Every structure is written in structure tokens, then in C-alpha cells.
Length: 109
Image (cartoon, one colour):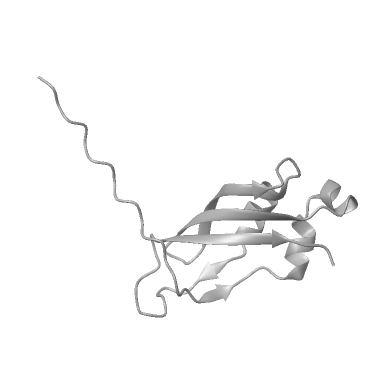
């Protein structure tokens, strides 16, 4: 007797219109900038896919990193710990359990 697998859990909705209560500052970016990249004036873009926790903090994974091999993905995950969003979006939807896509741009100077 064949049994169908259970349905996949629903994917959390991607949130828009979030209010950022906390964001990393310039010192945070300098602290986490990959040292070898800083020495060689390397810049980057990293795309993160993040889940919002009940306290508004975000837990992220790297979905793209350009260029790769310089440590910007890991640095972006560290910087992401400094983000916190409000409990609701601009239109009143709860943020807890939702997803946020965030691009981190690493630039010198």
C-alpha cells in the first residue's frame, strides 16, 4: 500500500514594509569586514534570506555572495545579528515567523 508523504510545512511569507528598530552601524561593518578583503580593497554584495524571531531578531542564511571566497558571507551573518524589526509591518501584519530578504553591500571608504 502506497502512502503519500506528509505535506511540506508552509513557507513563511516574505515581509515588506518592516520597521527596523536596530541596525548595524559603521563600526559594526568595519569590525566584521574580512581582513584580507580590506587589505586588498575588495568589495562585495551578499544576499541574505532571514527568519524573524518573536523578539524581532533575524536569523539568516546566505543565498548569494559576489565575489565568493573572501569571507563576506560569514561577515554578513555576523552583521545580521545587529538587526531587529518591529513586531508588525507598516500595514499591521505580524513579523514573527516571517521572512526578510536583505542585501548587505560591503564598500570601503
